[in-house]
Amino acid sequence: MDEGLDFNIFNSIILAGICQGIVFSLVVFFSKKYRSKSTLFLTTLIFSFSINNLGYYLMDIALISRTQFFIWLYFPSALLSPPVFYSYICSFLDQEKKFSFREKLLYLPFVVALFLIILYKIAAIAKYENDAFYNFLEPLPNLVEFSGIIFSQIVLLYCFVKIYKFEKQHRKTEIHLSYSGLNWLKWIIGSLFLLSFLWAFEMVSSVIDGISRAFYMLWIGMSIMTYWLGHIGIYKFGVVQERKKIRNYSIENKIKYAPAKQKNEHIVQIENMLVDQKRFLDPSITLDKIAEELHLSKSHLSRVFNAELQISFPDYINKLRVEEAKNYLLNPDFANYTLIAIGLEAGFNSKTTFNNAFKKATGMTPSEFKNTPSE
Image 1 (cartoon, helix red, strand yellow):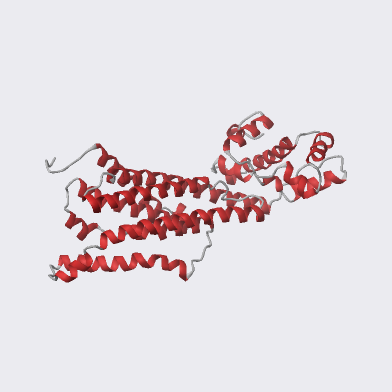
Image 2 (cartoon, rainbow, N blue to C red):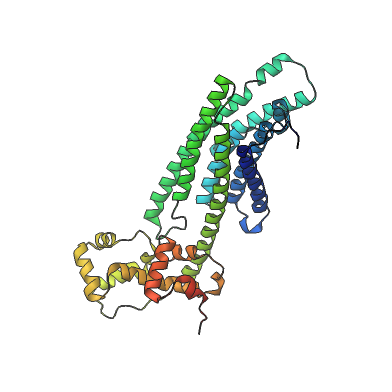
């Protein structure tokens, strides 16, 4: 090993994150299974993170000089990541999303910076000598980084608001949302927002002191985010795709449920709302909501369930959801689908709730039921 190289535990962790990010990006990019706009933006973001870290890693271990880094590896990833992340959020929430001209303009700062950096690289390689030219471009890297910090924070806040509005809108317009449970995306946005402050601290320190003590923390944080964003993002994409296919099946093949024997007015209304309209698939449905929509008191509606249907409201809802889930589990077309996708599409809000309700109703877990040979 070259004695001039500076290896330590921190840059070794960073290298592991870089390798994981690059390999992950290439595998997903060339996989037909994940061919979609959202995964294209996701892999672009992760690849950008990884290549950016690679350049700084090689400079940190003293394999290349700062000048070599800017000539051969540097590109304005700080201005690329915000619009790519925004594009990922938009296309994940809406696979048919068409980007407007204004949204495409988000890439303009990156294009301008890239053009100037390419000019610098060509001039440096060609050994062009012009002090005014180099003095003009010298502050560009710092300008890119500081602009990237502000740009990232604005985009992250906007994405958070966009997700909030998306959830609010679809709670009112859809029975059950295939993108339900977007908290993981909010956590990623929050984590990236915190990293942006570390990034700002690192940049200010490097300008004032000439060095930064936060470099390793920032790079390791980016490595962790690369792993988290990649695996969680792809996993969630898979769940969403499975839920869409299950939903299409449910719409095309409406499952019939045994009606209640006693049919007073309130029972008819309840069955129309919960069964015919399939409102039981809404994970946020509550006794209060039903009572409000039917213009009944909560206590009276509770008595209707207990006296007329001889079952509590939670058990009634879970019974319908379990029957829905059983139908999916028995369908060979969904044999390789994840249990979480089936549970969420049946109206449960988590895998744990799905398992508990299913076992209470059938005496076995969903996986045991799925693997039980049909008679």
